[in-house]
Length: 326
Image (cartoon, rainbow, N blue to C red):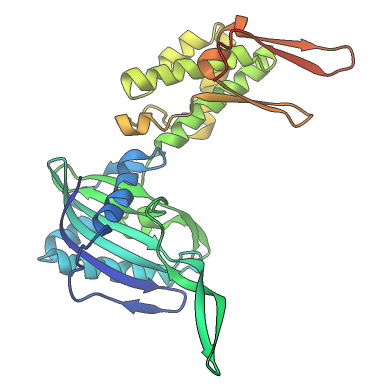
């Protein structure tokens, strides 16, 4: 549970150049506390979060220290977001939630960009003393608490760790992850999701080349990668290279494939919540439209699945050791 110390909500629309800054702190009533916690949790729980550190020269860090209090900081950050938003039609109008809070004994500053969404509501109209019920479109609806916040960042004040959820947009004619590059002035590595995807997809490509898309081999590699993430919270690349690939050409091809992506797959560490998000199933698709989803640990055992090529060119798949029907 987070303990909110201060919170301000600012309304920003760069497309229509509308900015309404709050002069007073927002009150947390009813289930608003739960709403805030659900959106803050995204930054700690999800795999698509950029993680790094801000240093003393960081633009935002300087503003945080020089503003004097959190209210002034929130106003300055809202102004900064607004100026960047005006430079791109791809940055959605939003309510910018700025909060200062405690979480598990540490102090954080959070900037959550709650993008406005279009929804439909009923509207009761009275004409000539007769009621007409209509459906109308409502533009300014915030995300549900069950939806993930799309953009924003958290900064741990003592450790200077930063957690960023960002989007790439067209800004002044160039593609930019604007929160990292224009708001925070940081250069970040890959997210855990992107790094894990790079490691597994590189393995799939090498297996396809050297083992003719061997599903058992692919599942064994993916199961090994997942076991590393479960046990070490990170990826040990050398263990994958030597445990999963038997020949030197395969190992070199795997390293080359990863190098071509420009991603360091070892530069992240997962927490327990993130480990629950790891993909643990393999999907097999056939030309007839049949899709089978199986756990890696099941496919990794050759005796569990038999694939036969029929004389007519079709394929038969036999699944063994399935256990009882539930």
